[in-house]
Length: 97
Figure: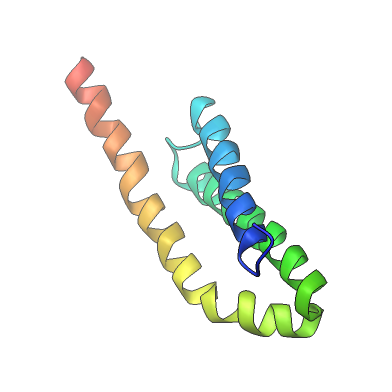
């Protein structure tokens, strides 16, 4: 945890908790709320990770090596969550009826 990835590991825990809490409140059942929930989860991961990495190597390098290379994958993961979660809940609703 003391190494350069420690902040990201803590951020994964925080992001998972946040996304789970929002999902329990129905934020994974509409397109817009899924985008917001996933965005907040990713923000937690990047926030914790960036802050910790900036302490170790400085803010400019932390952004260049710990945030910038991963923005495209983050957008892809968010799009995947939006493409999967609301339609999956629609199927669940139909199966329950």
